[in-house]
Image (tube, rainbow over all chains, first blue to last red):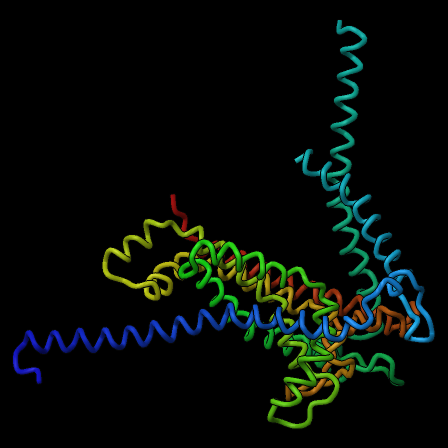
Length: 104
Length: 302
């Protein structure tokens, strides 16, 4: 095929172009799999949590207290616990944090 | 002689400055107190258990009689979880970062970055539950080829920890890539490079220090990750050679024992602080290494 030096050079470029585009494709697939796995994991997480959680998601869950009977159990006390923790954290960290920032 | 009002103003100014200084020192004092509270019981612990036994032993059984405090088995548990997490998060996180910074159109990027940050905002306990109830039974137990996978496995904990730190790697690495000046890319394009060549041969070396910083931050989060390990890696301290087995991690032990199966003041209770100190030393060493590497490879562009 490559009877002249010019022809040989053209062949070489064509071959390296083909190798280059294969590499590009592999690289592109690698990048997409990065973002794909992240989004896939997020979607799977949301779907499994929703499927498991949806039947229990009603107003009673929020207003009821924990109970020995699972069907009547709620999380009101746990919600108050979280509110206390978040509130106290804000109360302590905001003045100290902002004060430190202003001082610095 | 300043007037009364003036003097009051100066006094107020001083008082506020003093108050602010107290607040600034409070943050430092709190950090120091945490270290002291961690190290003092740890020193106590080492008066009861020789340091050499602690660091070289591999039987971790603080509740047994006779108790045994070979930390090596829970160190290995932590290393398994962190290593698996990094194997998941480094390639996928960097892939996502390169895609976002070099390939994605601005509109796609503006959509994907916040979605990734949603992943970063999921509470770790939800991830732990996901590992225990979905990833372990549905994925690891079905696909892992070696041995039987029980209720817990370091594999499931590691994979989910990797997913947890993935957005950290992606987001920080992407920031580092975005900081590489456009002129470098344009130079490479002008010489005939395509996107892949620009991203692997120009952007990657130029952003290397930032990428290392992102990976090390993710690594120290993975090694200290408690809730996922606590829920999904199991509580049996053993030198795991197969990641399909369960194995307690350092942070998992602290979380498990901290809930209260150790009598206050007992050697096992003090062991919590010894393990905590070790974990602290490990993450600090990681951070020091990262600062070194970042300095060594930093490229500054005007």
